[in-house]
Amino acid sequence: MMSKRNSMDRRDFIKASALGLAGVGTTLAAKPALAGQASPGETPKIKSYRTLGRTGFKVSDIGIGTSQTFPTPVISAALDAGVNYFDTSEGYGRGAAERSIGEAIKGRDRKSLFITTKVRTDGLAGTAEVAEKVQQCLERLQTDYVDCVMMPGPPTAESVKSEVYHKAIEELKKQGKVRFSGISSHGSRQPGQGEPMENVLLAAVDDGRFDVVLVVYNFLQREPGEKVLEAAAKKNLATTIMKSNPLGRYYDTKNRIEQMKKDGQPIDERMQKSMEQMEETAKQAESFIQKNGLKTPAEIKAAALKFVLADPRVHTLNLAFNTFEDVQNFLPLSGSGMNREEKGLLASFERECGALYCRHACGVCESACPSGVPANTIMRYNHYFEAQGSEKFAMEKYAALETAKADACRTCAGFCETACPYGVPVQTLLCLAHAHLTLT
Image (cartoon, rainbow, N blue to C red; front, side):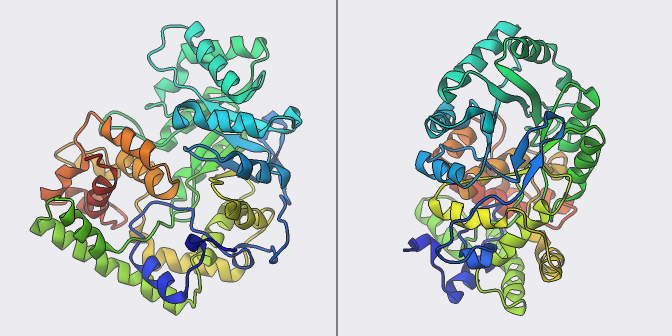
């Protein structure tokens, strides 16, 4: 039986879709018949395996990656269906995600799996400290080795050359505890204290010591990712994808304002006007849904994921598997291409609704902010909250920010929106993110 969150009539769908593109990604549920090729009652399986660059490993084109704890039974179901790639980190759930994976892979052929984890090495004095961190990852994962350790989010192109990291990885390779080295980037963490994602990852490709890159890539944010994919392909580096679905969870803006009022959060005239502008923009989504005859959010979400899977430079796509429905809905997309109708659907969406998506790893607007609000980082935390169901993790990360927070956006003149080259209502999104992420 479908859960309540998986059932949605057309009226609910239009309301949900039209008022929620303010978000930055989600795991909207889909009926298998709409999401891919699986029929009701059919057990979906991975249909395509791709060579993971110069690692030589045959990896499922759909992998598992999320910042929250992995439900072990769900992961076991995905493994049974042929998924064999994991993307995790020491910091996801303070190690809980790694522990979940460790439980799920018990009794399975370890050599048939490719596990990537991330370990922060900035601020560490020597290789022994890195080795200790990796050992803790291995213990949580209940394995003798990890296939890839990634350097997560180095702020600049120069920082990818960290000798502490590279020396530690070489030592761990010799000990048989690590097989390959990787790198990921979300762009700058704070305004003026980092470089764009593509600059960092292109520098990593040129460095020559990395084997795997994790990059943001989707149909609304192609150019930065394409630069990295092209450079990586020339050197036969493995490419894994995050933030592949730019379609946000949809929220009724008016209800959000009312809730903020109930919570005692101020709604000034400027913010009210910004919210009204958001609603006007969201009407485009309702028009788009009706004009294209969409019945569920699954149809366009499936097309968005197929866009990434159809790129031969992509080796695996990291998706959050939180429920058994996710297994049933995502896996039918494996091995699928895009048809003309789906290409047209995405082109139409980009043309009519592209302004509703705040681009991941962008940060172009940050230099225009007089308060130094880290828009890129805050929107990423909001993605964890909305799309991945990691509410507590997201709120803790936001609370720990030492910069200005998005409450400063309420009384601002909206310089970020003027600076945004995509016409995104950034100020409104940041105000909503603050309401989501504030612990008070």
